[in-house]
Length: 327
Image 1: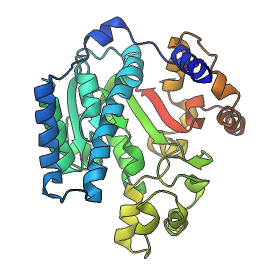
Image 2: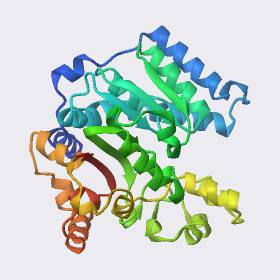
Image 3: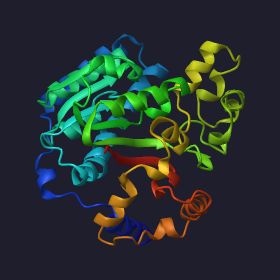
């Protein structure tokens, strides 16, 4: 009985997806899906690994994760973005395009796609994935710091940092944020999705430890050994420059402080929406999110909002999911 109640509340408080968006979802034939699976294994080098190898299991887990991400992007992120600026015909640049899951979800809605990622293997998988879905996209292997060298200014309607800003080092973040801003046409949207909030009391992204976001990088590197998450808890023993770079790539929190440095005072930015806004407005029960309002998360967000007046509430949520309009 309790399971049914929880499921019902989840359905009622989840955002609704329009029929038009659902009709545009593309499904792969079984044969094409199997061919895509084989190509991803080959590109990732998984076929060369011995059966039962840990890397094989992790790769299989990643593919399952991609399926979950595609569903999430279709049902939550794309409906949100589409309310801010119709994706059909929109020129979209994705920073950290990864394996192309987000590109598929946006491309099937008619977006014109460009993507940048520093991982060559990921770009090859993204290209293969989009091809399997019958979508065209221009992916580039590059660090986002060099965006202005890759694209003309004022070219895009949306620039999307999807689960990528947290994987950049401090010296990369601000230049990448500014460069992406320069590529937006007037009225365009600068979007960040799933960036773990440095202000949050628990790191659910990397270490799975309380207060980990608050630690300086050197202390966090040494303390990662207490993480319950293998293999991170055994990887980082000697703090060399190379080891520190690898550690930072696993993901460190982001907060409004980077936005202050990149764009000016965050309180003056035209933050048009957050995913939380969309969920409240588009779910059947509107603003009534029972589990959240009775829980620690809601109380902690309220505390942060009182301590940082004048900022958009999205800057105080566990993850930053914000859209900022360029004047």
